[in-house]
Image (cartoon, rainbow, N blue to C red):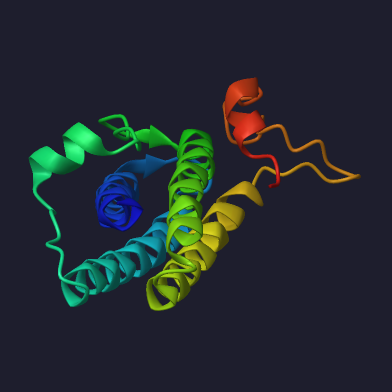
Length: 168
């Protein structure tokens, strides 16, 4: 059931958000530190709401660390200090992973459980906003190639990370 996977993905995103919040380093330290705290709080709220929806429809919610590590599609944030460009690319990529999974849950529940579908739409809206807030920091514009060199020691952010930053 897609609904059962959603709190797992949200909890993993929440954990990795706090890891980045504590360890982000670089030119954008302060704004990212603050933004990541806001994202952490929002993701925590939605993880709780989705878990409570599971309980309301008669299923249990599994938030055990082992379950999260074993089943989440969201990878761990690297340990140690994390460059601001790496944080931006990681979240732009992995918020999309979470949003895509939630989108599957929306499709699976829209006919037989509209309340769940509506909740998941609200959660997806928030995750998409978080992805956009990260992506916008390195999104090219007509007057700025914005390839991350100003955040990455004069080197462009690797193309793979920039590809993940593309709009939906």
